[in-house]
Image (cartoon, rainbow, N blue to C red; front, top):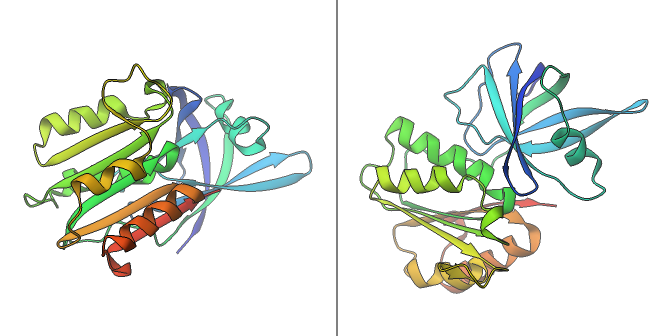
Length: 234
């Protein structure tokens, strides 16, 4: 059940271009499932504005949580949080959401994201490794960004791939011709690697247009609806 928490900003660091990792210390234990989100209450004059952000940290961390926030030009919530100083107190409500990691794993997870849509997927990946849920299954991450500087958690994902040979990390860049890896959009590449839907389960998160395109492609590839989980970011 969602609860109201008093939280304090612990740290606020830039982790990619225009993206901040913001950690909040809680006044009580937070129990949530990987993939869920919190509603932050942000003061705007006389009004409290509610903004929803996916939890990027893993559920086994119960005394604090991480948000991954993209600074949007003119966006009140994102700029308020990106400029937040350690020590500032806020309130939040949660957890919410049904976009969650399906446990135990019945199929090979295929994670597909763009931008900060990778935040809940990172929570899911950390959960898989911490709880040893993979059981030798192949785990995929197709992550799209505009430039290499916009690749959130890139070093962490590379480290995961080194430590777990069954983890296949595919960063995809859309606006930098000097990038030596995969170029274009996530929609252009994941079908090459996961053409057979048998024994696979897709988790898709990002802006609405990308999520719609990926879901359409997965459907055309024969993925049944129950094997596709998604979350739209506005």
